[in-house]
Image 1 (cartoon, one colour):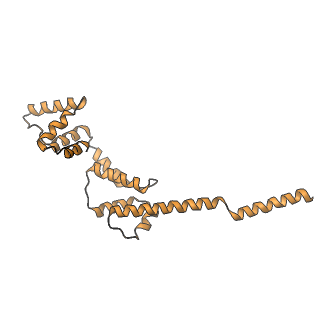
Image 2: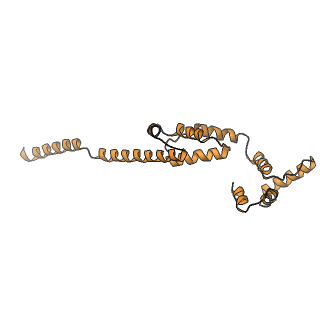
Image 3: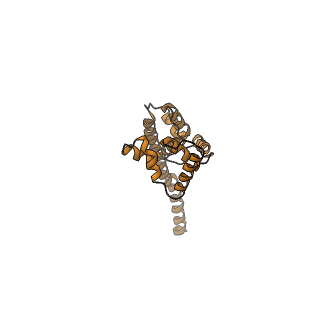
Length: 181
């Protein structure tokens, strides 16, 4: 991804991408590249000249075959649980990007809603939204509202008037017993 950003920033043409990328290889990566070039020559395979071919070769070499399956499983089971809405969205987008999934926005919205906490989902499903960004902002607002309410409830429970009255009256009875008997 970083390499592709550099290519875009410097407007590197397709014919220069592979030589520039392999120029940065060091250590084990350089040994792998040298061996790959030698092996392709021995088998009379054409040299790798396109960036997509190099990227595919690097993936085959360095990313285990089970990686994409595990990533898809993680994505399918992703739930918000104790994450913030924003953290949940970032994690979902990271998994989508790493898995190379580009889906219609309505599918991403459905995926997002299926993993969001029920308390938030139940409220935002009743509200209108235009796109995923709009939905996420609604979820964040609902999440903040829930946090405020739980904070208020926690604080109000710490001072219970009825409990205080009972304790006060029993203390008063105790003091009366001490002084009047």
